[in-house]
Image (cartoon, rainbow, N blue to C red):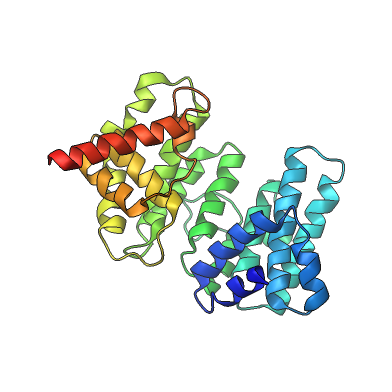
Length: 293
């Protein structure tokens, strides 16, 4: 009941609905919530949408585990997404789910994965899916992160960077998409954990400095177009702290309050499992710097 009501209360706030469906899918994927819901209200549109998201999560988990049923689960998840898209044609969530599932089809075997980019300088990818999502939720935060994941999963970080750079010229003021470069800077270190001090000091140099300032001034200080996510605030707090802008980082930590996220701290810690200590240390240093300012 609480799952059903939370989705219903999202109303026409599409970014909120997308975020809630993502969180709820992770929460119910290992439970029988959907089965109970289906017995009570089998024709629910929200049920179909959440079923699609859960089916995608299960298909991705099966693929990671190299499960014998990974391929049929992929195809079943795709069918769930299309069913949800048919009965909820204005809903962006089925299209986000299809973009999330797209990493399992790097060769773009399915027709919805095709379609050319809006700019010839951009790489091939699931552009048609993104265009359908754009019609329903322009500049969807999760949708554009899913596009990045599609390229990164294939080792095509250059295409991911081109996309993020192109998007900075198109995303509206206050859009959380202005933080995409910060995520890619973290991915650069994750992909080269032995890069040492040169990579870890990137936050003090260009282009990290410029990307951090854009996120700070164009997103955090500006009028945000939607509720700020803990993940976005955490990435900005880290970039400011690592870039020796601790008093500004303190403002972001204050916005986070008691909340935090595992990333980017775990990816950037010197030792496995050291993300929590790195987060606490950064927060402590930043708040101390702000108190002296």
